[in-house]
Length: 482
Ligand code: FRU
Image (cartoon, rainbow, N blue to C red):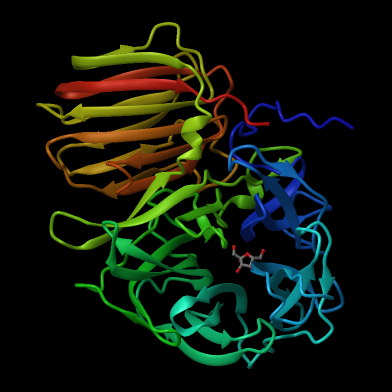
């Protein structure tokens, strides 16, 4: 039967399952020309439960095709989050011949949580659970889950990291089946909730391969910057056994200052760049989101890099993956060199899905930005703006549409910023029920869900208490990727 993806509030260029509940991305891997996105999925309902691994495949990171459910619960419990590693040389011995395949690492969540594997010889379409499971038994820790497996070139070993309470634990293996405990990392950073879904990779600073850092990303629920669940990262060294934090201060590094970017995972098997995606929701209200017959969406794929800021401190940069540019629609509007004071509605603009790129000089303005998904009649707007007095990029969804399905949904979210060259850059992706803001070339990122009426499709540019110079502004259509 034909599935319709053309529903009000259904994201048109973000992944959603045709129906039912979805949370974390799992098992992301680029393998034999396909990007695989597995995810926490309830095949039987639109609430958390029966957790399985759903599956979607893409050749370009933009168009996704849903597949059969990959892994389903068994007598050991539900199938919680995890990762996939390609075992091309059959080091595991799990595959019949010399040809290897894919190995999925997941948590069985029953009476206890432990780490198990399944393997596939048909590019992830069908899976066999390993008879020798669990590969990492539970050592007596209640929250013990979300194995991420990476290849550590320098020591010639595979590393598994997982979340254990408010810590990350590291294990090592040569064959992906036998794992030995290495170390743990914790007692630092944000501690407001339990740590989940860790991620680890090495990146050059400003592209210099001689100067690298390891990035350890962990998610936490609750207690994150915008309330509820969110991610933080640590920078340092990983020597194949121990992660050591190396930063000038012990400040908390938040990954995203919006409410809806959780459990980010990077694709294994992409050798030349780190691209991650996250669940675009928040455990605080995920089960109440007003969408039907599906609940849950993924963020856009983002490329992650490291750059030194003006103070010489290394920071995480997130930019929309390059592939998204190839699938931009037509240029809908363009402006340059305009001094604006007050508000300017873009005439005839009626769009639900688009992309804005803007460079603005604050001038005497106290606050400027965009009212998106705007309808003066319905009093709906989501404001993406810059507050020049506090140097803050913000998203305001107080009047963004449906907000009353949960007490803590409406709100304003702020990311500390710094003006470089006196210019503010805003790159904004608007979909039928989301807004992702990449500010100042990906230095600050804010991801939020919104649930506007379809009729709230206007757009206004504004400046308060003075004028702003719009150096350049482009708005592109974002066509449906279904
Ligand atoms: C993170 C998480 C994971 C767990 C999964 C269950 O959002 O809580 O720790 O494996 O979701 O669906």
